[in-house]
Image 1 (cartoon, protein in one colour):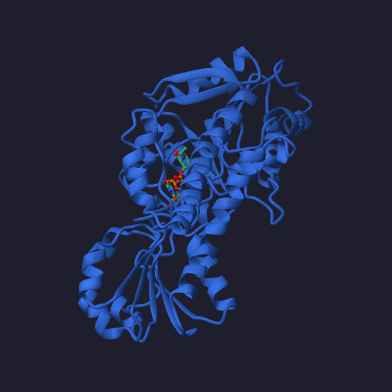
Image 2: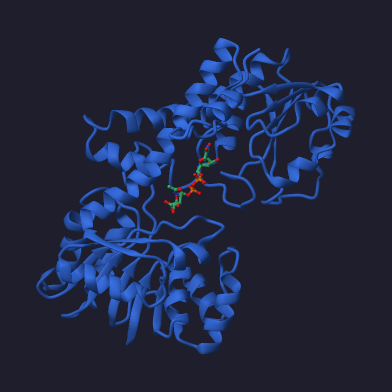
Length: 413
Ligand code: SAJ
């Protein structure tokens, strides 16, 4: 018997389990991977995230977190499993369904079930509840159900888990209040109570808002290249207006959130969600635009080196990596492509060894370590001269002074 049982010991489930355990609750962590459970039961963690190890050490000494492959009878269940997207841009809810089926086998009258995974609108009502009701119990009457979407930023999970505001969407008032009381054991941010479907759409719209704004910035970059204008200067100047916040263009939008969640809205209402879908397509075209820029700036189909393959700077997560899209595209066009990713080491070569003989070097991810590139050294080892900067990160005069040719996404001639 546990007080809280959390299904899914990934980037959200494990930190949440540790936070509950640290607050004094007895927690059961559930994962389909026996290796993950074994690691946790040995007092170790399988996830790299700043601050997580320290909390884990304290919790493992307290001894109130145990892991297993099946849910155990508990007062509350939290489902934090992945909701990936299929090739045809539809939500894959198989993990949510199987987690709910597992919970339904141990569900008792008076329990609370919380869904944390990001899901399409109405998923709590139309998908989760029917699975849970296979227990023979009735949602709202016998047990409580809420959707409390996670909103933490990878790299800052432990801080944001505790300090962010939370949207608590209940299928009824009693469910929302019970979920609020549960999270209050460690959340110091404010809690906003609403319906489950509103909470689902809130979470999706937060990421869609960012994706649409990035698409606008990317469209501005393309316009600027055609009009002979510097998009980065336009953004800087326009953002001096008190009510304007243009985002940053780049080589594409990656990660498992912005590149995925807006499709859940499109899937739900395809005849209405025009801007949402168009923004996704605009951002998905950027890795191919980077390949176009490489082709336009090189005479021969020689060696191209792509710097950075994670989905954003200074992390080790390569999910939905725009760099890998650009790589595939360039290879199809006949280029010889190499990727240099310092945060996911695959060899011991330095950037200068990887760039030896390259015609073009492309900055795809503006990792802090790339600020120290010695362009004189790079110029000596490269066969060609083009440095393509997709983030306006390099100092163009340093590149040009080394005898290299600086090209920047979004900067027209
Ligand atoms: N990007 C741009 N231009 C920008 C900002 C970002 O091209 O101006 C790109 C990044 O390079 C990256 C992608 O967008 O490829 C996504 O990065 P991000 O930092 O915007 O967001 P994520 O995916 O790491 O985390 C988001 C966050 N959502 C919001 O800020 C609204 C986080 O709070 C959520 O918890 C997370 O999604 C999630 O799990 O849904």
